[in-house]
Length: 80
Image (cartoon, rainbow, N blue to C red; front, side, top):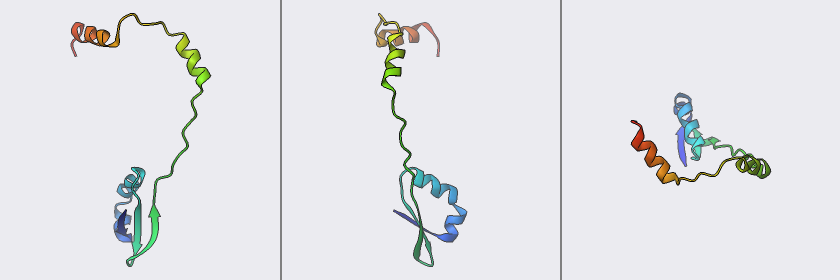
């Protein structure tokens, strides 16, 4: 847990928010006593619609060539 005094928090707020977003808890102190805490908000993940995903992948043609051979052919035929 990272602790920072209020004056430093004011001048480095965007950096502290980035730290909280990355999962670190940031505690803000006033005169040495904790008064606030920054933590990330966990957002719920969107559920996967399996029926829709299956309908999309059913329409895709099967590839005869392996992925490795395909990438090698692309690498050998084009400059990158």
